[in-house]
Length: 582
Image (cartoon, rainbow, N blue to C red; front, side, top):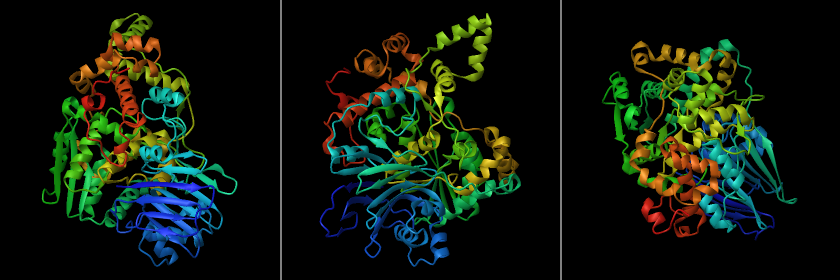
């Protein structure tokens, strides 16, 4: 499991250096760094060079680490040592110059003792895991785990109300540096934190990567192969001979499968979860796999059922309030299946949409943050009635919703997004990565994101005017995959049957709406609407349940003795016991 927790102390500690396998203490820094060890280069959690006074710790992976080693003649096979040498010599102790040559999905801690400065930095695509931090009288405490940070600092635990409102409004993630816990912040995408110890001050510095100056013609020629090059590079750096891949009937994961197969991977485990109802992609995936040798590609499947809902406490324990999504339980089933099959790294198509549809790089990034305003909720019947009144015809309103397939929640949220959001930071990339990595990491699995690489991002930027809904990308992918496979592929939509999951566990939501906790996170009008028609609001009720479980598991203090564990073995009934929803 990947975990990093440390303190940048304002006052210098004993000059004696403590350097163990996962623990380090010297001067102004205390650190505990644990890594899963899936690559040939990630055996060490940190590296400290006494000669330069520089410590480096990495979470995630630097895709071009061996290219950098060979280019600059660095005699080491460990990523933390290579990066320390790069920072101390090649980059001349400039964190921006260091990040400029590194490609991948990573968080890097650089502590420079001679300068008495620490850098909490990340690639332009962000860190696979959250980085939480809080300022204390002793120093800045940071961690990839909310639970470990709370345990280490002992700060008063309570909800940060504006962030909770944002969480309910945005529906997936708190859209700025705040978290739902008061006093705890997070490192957001494309922003790094620089800590100056003597002045006890912190400042942010943005990093969006290089422009690249790629022309449209070059981008069209390189786009698909830029993904393939990253797949090949990551695959050849893994320790295990087995390859794991999440496979749907969509374009992104099938492109990755084709690259892995073409590179000669001897054993590929394609993993598909049947989300239930109309979300079952297993038959389509099995059709695709007919074009591959069954000796080399094995299909692992699992079907979600309503009993998975009892794992919600464990899911909230794992996500720690960072994000919420209707497909959380599917991610749980997916990670459990991969871990049970012996996988410790898995290729994912996640990240393709934000990379191909978001303008990465300098001057780009059209992303959104909601204003701290009241969440808008409208029931399906109310929205239909509005459409009918406007059009003076119920048929038009019914047809609109039948074609769009939207619930009242989705319609109102989309309307809210257009009306009340402003640019802030790339929540889409952040959310896409964290929803996978937090879950996978709890099972000791490293996620691999081939679309999140600098070359693909640089190719995608000049193609955006011609790549609406990834149309140009799909055209190029179709050329590469061939007509037979392409005919089977489709846009991968919803991954889980939310309505069936809600119906099967209606008693939990009914009990929750009758209590007082819901009044703490929603307005009286919203509560009245939900209580009148709870079936119209499954996503909102899921978020309320999520927050209620978070309060019980993380904030109450009742489960602190298990904070060091990846999972909590408790059902919904066990977590709440005789406690009411108030």
